[in-house]
Length: 243
Ligand SMILES: C[S@@+](CC[C@H](N)C(=O)[O-])C[C@H]1O[C@@H](n2cnc3c(N)ncnc32)[C@H](O)[C@@H]1O
Image 1 (cartoon, helix red, strand yellow):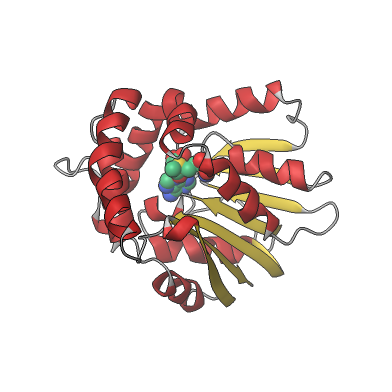
Image 2: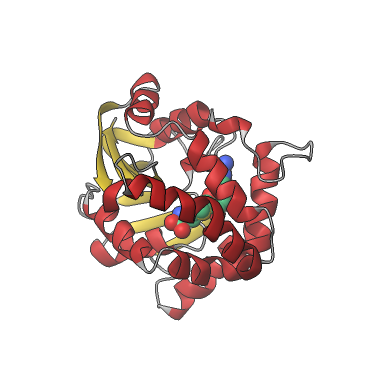
């Protein structure tokens, strides 16, 4: 299960602590590496994911594991009267997010807060919609994180999760596996200054319960109508579910 895979496998502290440390470390390089390593596809994936979010007028939307804020900004772009809260464990990722928010003139509509997805600092039923991009795979306790998201969603509210999956069709599966296992960690270790970060990316995707296994996690933890849409030949998927 994903909780077994840690960024710095030989060290003893918890997965959550290691994940926080890793993202604090790579924060200044995160955006440019994302763009380079995904050949710009990450932008399109986020746009499609937010297109599947159900956001009523003047909605409150939570973006969990917001990182440098790109998904939160996409929500603000697609839903002009929404108030967006981006939450993340790693302060240095939020420093980047706040800078981008100020630059884009979004500081009054998009707010960033430090916090843990497994212990969300919000009342029950606080948000009309919740999103997570490339975050759930990093949770220390996945079911607990999903139960917390369920708790803060309003009844009828929608969750959208964008996450890497393992491509399943020959020969793309084999080609992508080679890129993801060998080339991406090599380039990532130079670009990010962290030797382990992009090995962890590969390992955590292998361990993550993708496709039906993740919709089962959603259903087991309270969500209804859980389903998924595969993107880019199975590099990632958008999962949707409702409270
Ligand atoms: C791969 S980044 C994704 C960032 C952003 N959502 C995006 O689309 O680029 C994963 C983020 O999840 C955050 N994260 C991991 N575990 C978390 C947790 N338990 N609570 C809150 N944030 C967490 C990390 O700090 C990191 O910023």
